[in-house]
Amino acid sequence: MSGHNCENNVDDCPGHKCMNGGICVDGVNTYNCQCPPEWTGQYCAEDVNECQMQPNACHNGGTCFNTIGGHTCVCVNGWTGDDCSENIDDCAIAVCFNGATCHDRVASFFCECPVGKTGLLCHLDDACVSNPCNEGAVCDTNPLNGRAICTCPAGFVGGACNQDMDECSIGANPCEHFGKCVNTEGSFQCQCGRGYAGPRCEIDINECLSMPCQNDATCLDRIGEFTCICMPGRKTF
Image (cartoon, rainbow, N blue to C red):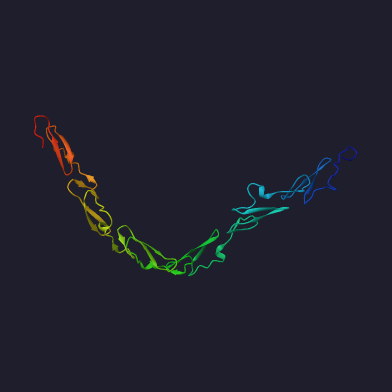
């Protein structure tokens, strides 16, 4: 301090030791160094390792390399910028044909095709416009040769899904309990034998449900028939 009454604070900053762009801040009989973000320590002489900071100085999976007084980011594909925070506009170099609209993605792009065009670059005629597949089938255009690909619904086969599949001649009988399989367009039906019901003849008909036995007799269900066990003194049938 200086002055008649020691009222003046002496500026301690002249001849300061702040380094690397540090700003001297005067105190009482001392001074402090206000360091830039890349440096630390009493005199801003210690390098800050930005790669050990949380969160990482490099975004979106970028790899951080510390340097004296700074750092460097090596970005993954699709990102750029000092901290890898900028998504590269892939549409800037993309070639979408036939008036298609380009949509940028990360390290890729998507061409939104106009009606009648398909393919990665909308460079192919859409083979599905002419409805080459049978009703109920899903149509896609082969991205290599532009031909229609028909994905058939159950019960139909063929390139255009217009051929009925004979389920009765493929593999084992789909009808249970010796039911007779009858092919129909796109499906099949089962003609069940006596005592069975259901789409595949899988249900055993319980003839006792109609309570055919009388006089407190016990009904035993059988295949296509029933038996009544009569109380003592009555005839069983």
